[in-house]
Length: 116
Image (cartoon, rainbow, N blue to C red; front, side, top):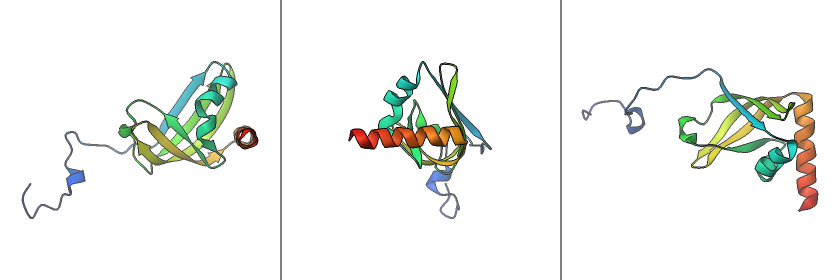
């Protein structure tokens, strides 16, 4: 890199990156209980943390489409913004959830708070 090169160190990547318009996060669980055991400790009415391999392929600020299913039942559907990326996964801030998803998440949070 030349001294007067305007690129920042973040701009120097091995492979060029292309913006992605709409990512999809789709997870399937055998039951609602399996979903709860995976995420109940990391969920609030405002967002949730999704554990995943290779989370650094995602960037803070990206919008994702969510669809989580348990058995044949859809349990969460909507959109979220990636608010955090760390070595274990991504933190999502809910943007728009359908009424069923919002009610389920509110119920999960109430149960978790009551359980202490």
